[in-house]
Length: 466
Ligand code: GDP
Image (cartoon, rainbow, N blue to C red; front, side, top):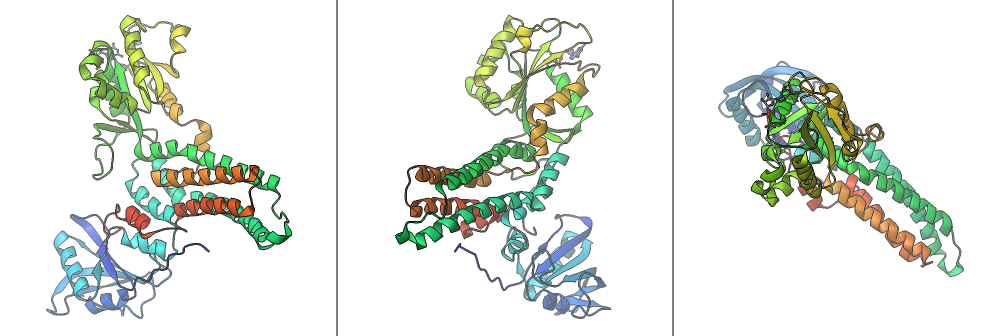
């Protein structure tokens, strides 16, 4: 009943699979019916590529068939459909990792019948050939983009199909309800209820609860992928730069940013016990009392409004002075659903009791010394615990893309509508229509229901060769 995309992609594509630039080795891939023909046409070696068993290496040369010039010394492997990444016949050529050599080899492959692959086309073919669903295809890109252990683990879970399985389970449950409703429609003259309305209502309600749970994981999934956005706030000289420097020294600072990601400019990124943190705007660090006015409302709103966690930093010995309270007020006004951590610094100089009326204003209070490092390990544990409570960490299935969020929200809407129709005792046609809408929205996530536009959106953000 559902829209199943049937694509027949008959041409053979090629691209560099390894990173561009110089390296010891570069790998060029071919995928499609003519992969072996094209490779055999330019390969001269001890083994015949047609007769050689799959997933073995043949040593030889790539030779330009026109000029008979040897281009490079290579190792060639072939894979027979459907036992390959794309599900098609594939050939991998490992050559020396020089951009000129790669260019020359790609040129002879193109001259001998291959076409240059579009961005993400290898993975797209893997999806279209049923080697993986859409979620898994997306996770291939996420695995490559991972910057911390936690985000890698999440993407690996997604690649292994854990989220897909959960969605499949939702779909099966809905399909069953739909089948009962449809039997009823077939016997509509006889006015029999095959699907008990109470059961139907309860089952759908149960599914809505589960969809809600999954919707709630979006925040975590997104944070795992993109990082916890941290803002450091405090009056001058409380030690903001010293704290940041210590974090950057103790933890793994992540220097390089992948171009083309949709985030703001990121000044600093660090990996604290496997969780990625980004400090999105150093201007935010100097946010305090009078300076808030100077910085301007827009900037304040941007830094605080975008933060997942705000570190409110004060000096030990003078916890929450009049000025601190003023700044705290402004912080709270401009925060958007962020967690607030009171960081009492310089405890090497002076320790003091933090009064309850102060600590109740924060989610967590930590005492540290940026100078000696005292209290930092507890601080980091509490920091990670602020966003990732243990229950959520146990939940190993997350959604992490707006696309998933949007489709799940539509699923939820349709299910709510279905249950409203059940309550109003509407005829089965109406209810089954809603159930179908929910099924379609769910199917979009894994790609059972899809359009060329959705695919274009996903795969065009991949790079060529993936
Ligand atoms: P910022 O203006 O908030 O960024 O503060 P800085 O990080 O520049 O620190 C202000 C001063 O406090 C510097 O002289 C630091 O060396 C000092 N300082 C920062 N943290 C500590 C600490 O934990 N203990 C002590 N004794 N001094 C600190």
